[in-house]
Image (tube, rainbow, N blue to C red):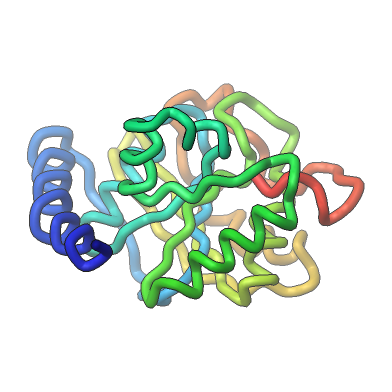
Length: 207
């Protein structure tokens, strides 16, 4: 089944998405860095669902599937749950972060190519900064993260250099800040600052 899904994505879905996004909508990708086989794709600023669709276009451009986390309850909507799983959804219980982490790690081990999409701010609304979950996942999975953002005035998807997580989360965020600060969101007033939110512990909700 995985081989069938991969063939459908590579030969049907990806070419169609790229054609529509570039030829009709006018978007382009900007990237000077080769991305690894497994990594967390950090999408910021995140102010609308359109951001995620444009990043999905980039994944189609490089013929790589993107996985994402979604709350467990959506799996109960039979046909919707099946469709979301086909598109790359990883169902997690946000109230059980360690169980969610184990599910993400299993998914990463099960695929040679694994891109996990995460919006560190955690919401389309304004927040005082990023949640630490992306860093927690990257460290436990021993995967780098790659910053990405959709610049709406220029219709360009910018993909940054991979950053391997260290024990200093603020220093890791600082490496990505210069690139991400140049990106203008669809709704700039909702864009969250590129900094860490105050947290009580690493067991805070992952996303």
